[in-house]
Length: 511
Image (cartoon, rainbow, N blue to C red; front, side, top):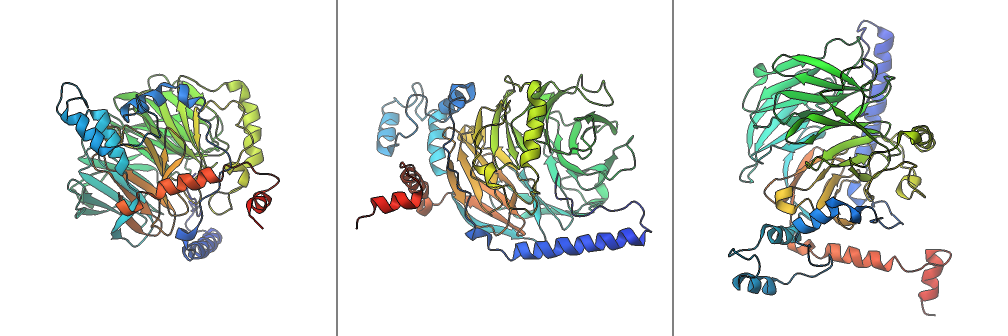
């Protein structure tokens, strides 16, 4: 669920409810003021004692494919690259037989040596919290949406990021929560705390806005936390509260409802299509930690509970974001249990463990991620949840305050070698998919980084934060050795300890 700060009563004439809402708003504003005074860039990342478990992942097709796409098919991951040797092989025609250049995999290998590692510049400073930063499919346009109720479109084609259009959004009760470009990049859709999807042309004005209301529902408060255009551009799906996935036909302006749970108490925090060429199969990430896959051709047969094709169990707390690898099999999920997990849909979870996993969640998820301190058990779980069918888990970032996004790096540019995510410490965290370790931790923001996007062509990440700033992050040579130093420090921490780290250091220190 995404940051419900106050419930607005349907009875606007009720003075009692108005006073309650004012009290809640005052409390939330006081909390936000206290949070804004915190120096986020000095926050330390959580300490993860255990090592990434690569056993299942190294046997998967995804691991082998990423190794090949990243140029590691015939070399170890820690093999150092020699520019002179690579150029010599290319000139002798040995780099890529049949061509006079490097192969695509070799080009990705070189590109991955220069991934973003430092804040380059502040692109813009806005008046309120930034919720959405998103490139279109080709990277020609950048969409930025924040709590001030405006959608801004910037030029992303040449890296100048000058403003192309500024559009006032309709019915923004609290904030624009999510937005997405149409497949052709000519329109975008956005969602708010309202019962509608809003569609606007990229070059249009407020008067060009079209909206599609969600009909056939009780008069309940409705919010759409996540939305996606279909690959064909004729449908929009949205994850909402009350255990609903809303499927909207743009042409006919009709909506259908998928029920993820029998009881309407669980929010759907994220939705996504499984493949960018298949408009029929979607994924839903729920606030109880479940991930469900639905086939839109068969899932509308029941009004009480829509039948899922696959259910995935493994998160102790709610899913905040889903991103598909666009191969029809692999998906990543970010969660309030402070982990990112990889899933192979050909390895579904057993429903026999459903009752036990529900009890495990009740034991560990009594905290509120919006303002409570993260339980240490999330960072160092003693064992995986029973029935966990994920193939890989990544830990090291912090998920609090809002629904943070995590995504695969671009395929053509990096071979999807990395997973990058925002962090509540104000950092951008980049994980190495193959090793499970943090490759880069980019500082610069002073509040939670809610959304970020890696340019499809250029090696740069645009990040939006609740500190009201949007940053451009790219490669900096002076920071290039930082990850090596972090790795050396990590290796030193692996030494065998006795009763405690303090006692071990005392034994190794000479008198």
